[in-house]
Length: 326
Image (cartoon, rainbow, N blue to C red; front, side, top):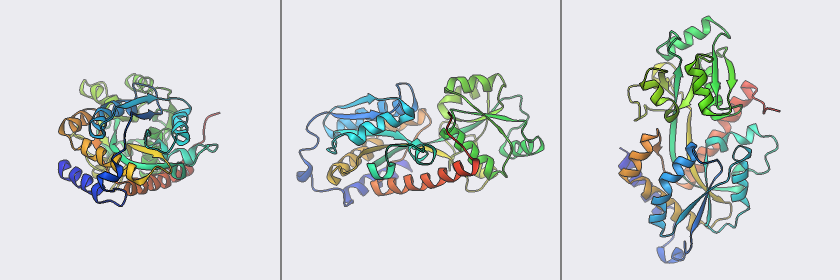
């Protein structure tokens, strides 16, 4: 189904109001494009950037140079893009953390929706619900029943206070009847899985690449995925929605943004190149290997998804009373 959907995405860009005849945008790009990733090398955003940059460069006819600008949980790199000239030569590859920041960071120095221009989503990714094998549960209904029978006994880990993995678990906890679970935040993904394997914590929402091998070798047990459909990386694992909570979804995304004010013709050209690149079977296979699904869309569709996620995660933050540390 993806090749057909991706073809429609390409056609959507070609027919979009943002696109113009090739002659009108023929001078862009005329020099290398800087792709700022607001996280250090080695993380999921960096991995996605390194998979998509060559394909974008090929279709745009200029090098796409990755610039890792880590710090302040993504804010430093984001601000660098917002301050850059709105000429299409500085782009941002960010994650769905952008939809959490407005509600979680009270002193944010920019407005995500005002200061950034969505170009296209790149990929979506579900989380694995993983438990220590010593926990006597093999499904989401069993986990819910076990937690309700032992209020406060189970501890879950996350990638930090206000992280997407904490919010995904909090959405699940609330949706399952306000389960009483203890939250243990970790500074790194490696610390989280180490504590989960050693049974210091009992469960977590983790990325597919972060836990898949540990599940396959029996050190962890995967009982569900959090997305709207099963993941190609582990198709035998059911979704939370099909197992127990109809309509449940907690998934991450990575996407491209430009500084607000960037010409629509340039955004249209980058978007069309993105959709064409993601239609490449080799790129799709590499992305699915790390648990990601290609998900290009138009700037309007991406802006709507961003707005919906800001509303969802803002509500979760308020209901769970999640406060920044310090």
